[in-house]
Length: 249
Image (cartoon, rainbow, N blue to C red):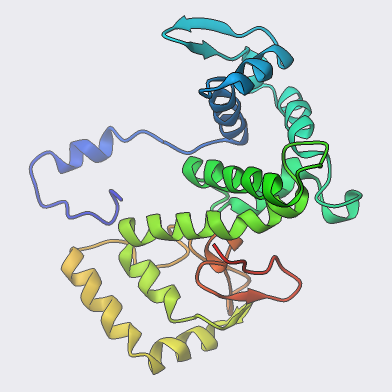
């Protein structure tokens, strides 16, 4: 957001010099999830706290998780497997839940939005209750897979607010399949007169990155091939052979 914002004002340089990195690690994201579950407004929260260690009461009905739930990857995996099972199918061939989820929610810079992560798992929990009520754990692997489309819609909505020019550019690729040759991308933009629209938008915003791979919207495979992370691909209705299909949101 800062990179794409106009900076023709006093102290703009000081803002940049005092920037703080707000990227979320895998441990941060799992820690946030467990903190939310342990502080949920309902009896299930107490059950979760009792099953995952000694939580410290902070007052006003709030609780602080054990350090291991916030920072220990092995302990986080144990707890998450108790919620989602170990695999994204009946065995390991479909992948492990603990790695499948962050791998499919991340952007081109391997970053995952906390809101995206929580919205995805919330959708998976609702789908599990509706379709697989007898499943032994709260999150069914099929529900997790289907929830990716909801997460993608949330992330793309954020992209449109933060970097409208990037969303405008990728929208023109709807109906295509990744990986795409760079010439395919350029042709789609040419046919839709998109290049002029993006330039006009960038000029009105007075700056901002002009490369889609810079904010992590796309990734490059070599010099002539373009790919999109699933977190953007699904909401923009771009397919991938053998990839997670787009589902109704």
